[in-house]
Amino acid sequence: MGNKREEIRAIIKDTKSLPTIPGIINKLNSMSANDKTSIQEMARIVSSDQVLSARILRLANSPSYGFYRVSTISNAMILLGVDVVKSLALSSSIFEIMETSVLGLWEHSLGTGVAANIIAKRLHLPDCEEIATAGLLHDIGKVIVKIKCPAEYQQIDEKISKEQSLFLDAETEFLGTDHAEIGGWLAKTWFLPEKLAEPIACHHDVAQSVNHRIKTAVVHVADTLIKASGFGFSGDSFVYPLQQIAWDQLGMSEQLLAEIVEELEDKLIEVKDFCLDLQSPNAD
Amino acid sequence: MQNIPITLVEAGMVLAKDVRRPDNPVGPPICGKGIELTAPLIMRLQDMGIRSLIVEGHPVWQEGDKTLEEQLAELDKRFAKSGDKPLMGMLKNVYRNYILKSMGESHGK
Image (cartoon, rainbow over all chains, first blue to last red; front, side, top):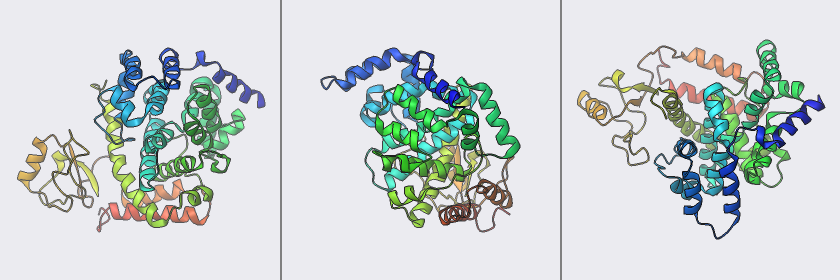
């Protein structure tokens, strides 16, 4: 079993085997490391790839961020930040796979992004867009399992159907690891900032989070709320226990939770419409 | 409350949420919640490109809509493995109250 875990780790280290667009990302990474590079210069590089630009703009206009009128990459970089746009560029291929073959997971991810954004805003946290992005990306490890370990993915799926198991337990049994750890590896391989990598890697175990516990706690609560709402499908239909450490870290209360749930449920109508629009024949 | 296509909205229904222009969803509302809809108002909203409205209660039954009992049964199922920790009991209760409220006083009946 340990072998399978190492096998997956090796797959992720080999970036060539992953669905992404390394050329532009490498350029963007080196440009963003250079203080003298302007947003316009970085935007020009991304805009040179029309398909990638369209994918990024579609995500930037998703209900996860709530801007709706982001029309250029340079606008997206100003509104969402360079790190967020870079992360969306890197993960756009993963989202493409979700949209076409695991739609329920795509809905769950968008919903978690929306929930994370609502929680962050309600708590007046800085970097709401980054937190929303961490929510959007939190289950990317599941896509890697699906495309790189199809046999195990099927076994996991069968176990859940037959025994009503939790996805997390089933994947640990068949892979010796879980999607959170795999997502964390992927985030590191892609050089995503730690503030995104840690919430992805620790969203099922907030206590493991060291440097970005608040962001991780938000993503954990957002994930739990979307499961409780029954929106989308993330592999199983059960709500995972809400961790006390996350609740305490955010200073949540029952009243605040009820207000967040009400706002979230309203927004989920938009998310559903957004997903339906993407599936319509006239979509980009 | 219920989100319904504008073609199924009828006079007398009450808006449960503000309505905003589709081309400016973060702009000011063009029609506020609590307003009772009239036929001319529905037509005007339709002309503005509004495709659906969120109204009070559950006045229209569409294919796939779930009854209150079905929604509460699904909620129980979703929480079946989360144990009996106080936080989970509270979370479930918040959702239960939301479902009851969203179905209106008549609970969709």
